[in-house]
Length: 281
Image (cartoon, rainbow, N blue to C red; front, side, top):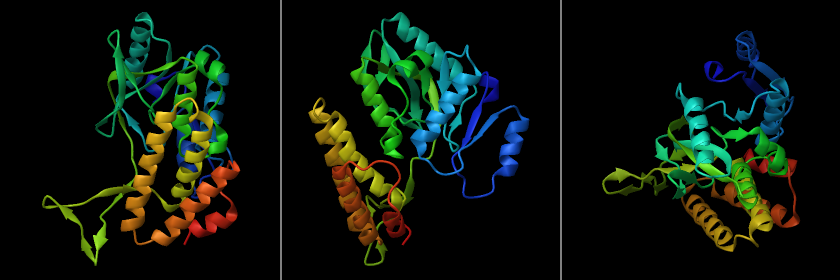
């Protein structure tokens, strides 16, 4: 990233392994290092990174967010900024610039307006955010902790009249979750002669997915009823598949129910320690 940007800020969000050697090497290369001390959630880490980056570069007009497991092409930033300029010239109020594809999969398209490709709910890695938009919309919602952080920001910007532009020719390498092969009576499910492979998140994520769906529906459901219904049904379908085909379905079920209940209560932030113990089983 150093050749593409004026500076790089690295946030260590409470690493549980010794990363001193890695961080020292990054600092020697010219990166800023911010140690948060404990896992405060992806939203808080992003907020710390963006604020630090803008504070250290007073003349910077944009910031790029990136996960530690993401990879970019050598001209990603150049293409993203070109897409921003083209969209502005076409009369689009740009809130975010996102990659055209992630891990080889095309990003979701909302519409093409005046030749500009507008996207839907991009993942937070690979986003180019204008400083002016950050100042207008504010930071990511830290209370979500993890899951739906990117969607909440997209929805908030949309309600403010900002669009997400997909930058032509940009590709983000990024892990989209672990895959597993479901089995029945000890034998892998097959379809069309091939083993069935499904995406499954880490157990603890199901608490946040369930809880934050309730929080998101409460925040945006009254203005976006069709969206809220669709996303709720998609989550329910995913939960049903995972619960039916996973070996640890009891643990996952308890985490999902705990998430729903805490969402109804309006609980935000990190999951309770009692739920963490369930997730570790």
